[in-house]
Image 1 (cartoon, rainbow, N blue to C red):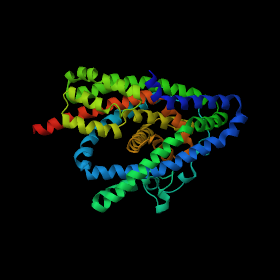
Image 2: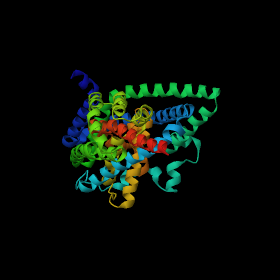
Image 3: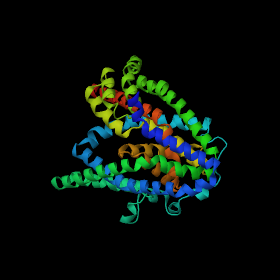
Image 4: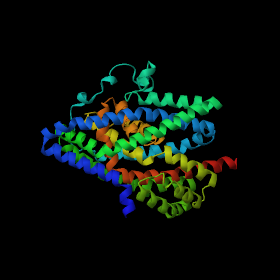
Length: 403
């Protein structure tokens, strides 16, 4: 029990800080405005660390994939399974927001004030994927171009042979340094987020608190639907009816491990073992599950859909319709993919959501709280989705061998 509390102490501390901040914002608005600079300083430091973290993490990841020849043999072979799970999680989550709005009848109605100044003008696709000058890459407003640039640098280092090894060593060292710096900064997260949230509640109103409670309820119900209906259905379609019972039987130990440790990465060995016991080919289990642990993040996709809808509703934007749905689900998948590829990249995904929606980066602080309160159910879905991905890939491999 003490071990479980230790693993979740950071989450508990942040939630306590947010609750304290909400109380200050609701009861003493003037005091909330006074502590706002503390929250702003914390967020500014956080955003400053995100940019080098993205560069080092993505460059190193693509260097390693190219060096190990995984880009063609593993990554592309599993993309189909990832896409199936991403779409299932995204669509189910989006439909849940249509049935129960995360913010209910509450909306800020001041969308223009939340717009980012950098979002105005230009071609939307060009602005989202590229910048016109090199220094603009290293900005919290241009994370997607930075990710593309970092991937190219990582691939270039892998193609450079021995000279590229020195660059990879630089990426590795830089990545480790930034991760440690981020860990030190996160000790101040309860205070920083608490002060930021106090001012947010003072400005927006306590209706935002009801929205967070609604989101937690919605996501818990959504988690149950994914774990007990959608994932078993995918396993049945991929490997047959007889695979559903073994899936439920063998997935329990790694699920409990992930729940107790608050980490789907720690549950990875158990998920590999569960996949093998289900009859999935060992080579598939040992390659797909680790890759899915880092990149798939099915639970994060479902949660990021809710984050996007939450922000859009807060800004007074419409979320109903085929085109908004495609944009919401696409943004959520991209955010989850980026946050999975970048070490400790939750805030990176949230910044990317703000960037793609064209809202001020400071709004990432509001949706960071969603990630905190829904961390446990999201971890469960992330963990189990890795085994589901392996089941899809193994079925495809069997067909290929039969030809």
